[in-house]
Amino acid sequence: MKSSAIILGSGTSNGVPTLGKDYPESFLADPKNHRTRPSCLIQGPTGNILVDCAPEMRLQLLREGIKDIEAVIITHTHADHIMGMDDVRAFCLKYQTSIPVYTSPQYQEDIRRVFSYAFRDYPPGIWVPRLDLIDIPDQITLGGVTFQTFWVEHGPIPCLAFRIGDFAYVTDVSHIPESVWPNLTGLKTLVLDAVRLAPHPNHFHFEKSLQVARELAAETTFFTHLSDDYDHSLTESSLPPNIRLAYDGLKIEINHEPPAEKT
Ligand SMILES: [Zn+2]
Image: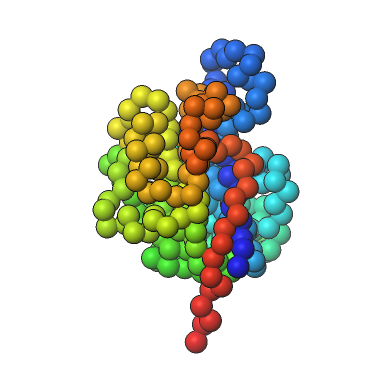
């Protein structure tokens, strides 16, 4: 069975280009050097699952022509992963119901705090996002695809990673615990954090990501969560062919088993 992933945003937390900086014209001329904040969309056979709500979420979904969302998965609650969440309102209005948002209890608390207005009562006709916060299990079928979920370390906090068939998405990671390595072997495509060239306490940096990509040995690894250290074509020309840079709008084919029949 085939599904697909779209990298909605491939940039680091401040986006690329970054405010207040000058860039060479040649850098700005490449659309792949324009990176919105990190997010991806899984297009399953029966629905779309949004992974994180970047500040540019509305623009990302308009750009890709996405008109429906079945559910949202939040990997963690840093601003670059949740600040677009107010725009879920459009889908609540369209379906006249709440949208399921799957994450850990710890991150549900953050969402309730940051978007406290979304959990209050209002008179009819006033629309706020209606978010159904749900604990994310180790395995869940959404949009007709089965996600295996697991946690990696992102500095001092956990970040949710997941696998669907031969595809895995690991954004925001500084350490992959040995216990979850089996989830990341035998992959056709791995999307992996590689925030910048210099070491970073909360992220894999370029050399570390290269080392982990070699060890996990996916057929293709795409680096994501990228800062302006990376000039897309210059960097790619120095990389082995099985290691590439993600870019906004990158589409990846996913091969997976059909979900198990519910008994
Ligand atoms: Zn983060």
